[in-house]
Image (cartoon, rainbow, N blue to C red; front, side, top):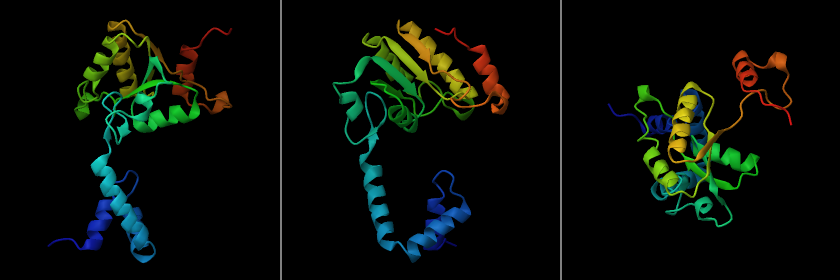
Length: 198
């Protein structure tokens, strides 16, 4: 027995992160009851986006062109490359910092149990970029998870092989945080990686 169109709609909405059965049901009912025109626009835009948005050949970020606007910009510092796990991480760095270098989006992190190795992260393309000799520093901005740390170590080794200086984002006590409320792992990491004050 095939599912009704309503059931198919609800099930389709569940592919989104954080959307369970109840949320998908509410979204489907909202679109059908109050937002049919918005739903049509959403469907059209989603179809076009999925067809036309691909990955930049240089940094692997999402783009509609072969090379994204960041990689094509003449105003970016071509000697710095920041490696991040996802396009969302790139956007966070771009919005929160004054960083003006280039990026490399891994589209994940090393996770052998999930079948994600260096090839899946495009590290052959990253190695080729490092081998060109233009990049002098690679800023490693992976998340401080077990997989993120393993990925960071791999990236640092790759950078050193190409005579590129690897650097890592600092991790530790958040600005404005109080020590008694910081979790043990974060506090331990911050204490172990402390720096001399200028």
